Length: 349
Image (tube, rainbow, N blue to C red):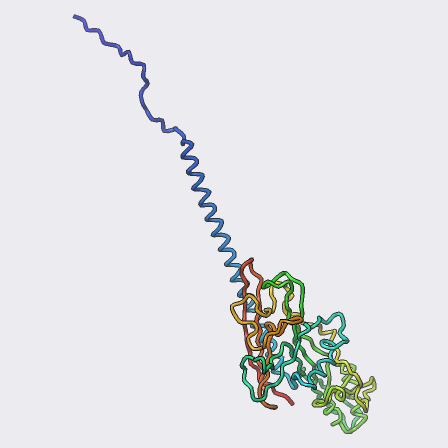
């Protein structure tokens, strides 16, 4: 008997799962949401990282600038031979300069209205001022030795070389400059170093007893070193400066209403031209107190801000403290700061 094979009548296809099947809409949405969350987290991390990097850079820059500036002031004061205080003599000398006086040229930055020399405290310490004992200043004026001039003479008793000490008046003070905003203030505070034209000592000049030799030497001093006036150390400003003419003859009377002119050839040193730094304002956004030594006064332009000076000790053994607090430009919400202090012994005539 023949057996006939049965044919299947089912029309169903084999149930294989294709390896090429796509993601469902729900899976795609979940993946996109996860990627978006990771993107947000990565972006925030990058913003924080960049902000921290800029803050560290600004902090290091402020610290470097502050210490370098303090070192420059210390070097200047080390060569000082006369440091003026907030007394009648000091205020008169300050008013005679074209930095603090009324004859200021346009090339000299204007000091803030609250500029004040420190008052010498003979028996004091470097302690903060009080409302009843205020001696701190925020500006300095002194005379520093600026090298020597060697003059060869032939018209005296015998040919010889004479040496003259040269001096310059130097001032440090604060000036206001437009932003960008640093520390929440519309203006910046820049530190200015001003210096005068050179002077020679009248004491050294009159020590040359031969009038012909003296005239020859002073004529050369004027022509070669730009010394147009002799300075009498220890005298009040109205009796301290004597004119030297082109022939080397010295005036017998001091120059009236004398103006201590700035040296236009040397220029003015503006410490923070890059606009990314500012001397700290009173109560500035720093982690160090401003002020630290002076008694705070917010009238006019404010006093003393982050440039503070104190002088203590008796004549011949005085010391000056210089404190400089800086702010640095950083991303919004952060302020880099630096605080440096030096104490310099004053070696005067």
